[in-house]
Amino acid sequence: MRNFKLLMRGAAVAAILVATPSLAQSRIDRARTAVAEATAKVEAAQTAGAERFAPESYARAAESLRTAKDQLARDHRDSTINEARRASGLADQALAEAESHKQDAMAAERDARRDAQATAAAEASEKAAAQDAAVAAQTDAQAANARADVATSAAQSAAADAAAARAAATAQAQPVATTIETTTTQPAATRSYSSSSTRKTTTVKKKAVPVKKTTTTVVKPATSTTTKTTVTTAPQ
Image (cartoon, one colour):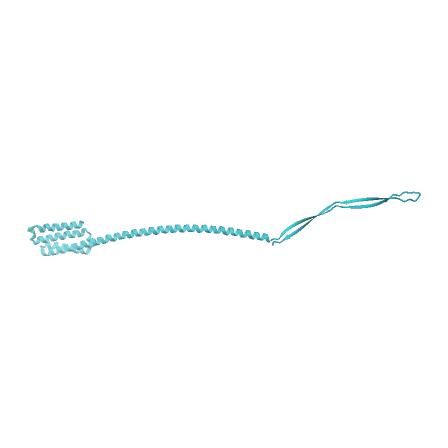
């Protein structure tokens, strides 16, 4: 917008100079008008950044403008007008190139910003994914450790059960000794013994002498006999 204003200002100056009847017929005035117009365009191109974005075209426009001013100082009117017009054309070209390059630069800058933002977003997404993966891996590791602990406990329990089973099997395989006590009771025994006694007498006449019989009873008390018998039973 500013460049357009500068161009309009140069054109207005040129129009004022041309519109004056007394100057319209003067070749020197036309040369001066051409130089003023070229100067305005070169300045507009410079303001638009032609020195940076269109350095070659701007340098040629500035050189032509210097040549036109030099020819004007020498009062070479025709060459002044030609060089001034050439400078104006080169300034227009430099201005157009500068605007185009500026647009390209702005577009490139926008693309760079967009790419940078996309890259930053991708990096943030990758970082978040990596964090999620790390958390998932940690969770899996904890679950694996828990399963390992359960498996270890189960193995220890199985080992204990197996040891108990082996101990029980070993105990069952050992012969079992059983002691049986048998008590035999002998009943009391009774025995009777008979004995005779003769009383000696003296008689004149021989007479029969009575014999006195005595019976003795002997009672033997009952006796008990205990017999211990050990019976070894082998497991089936």
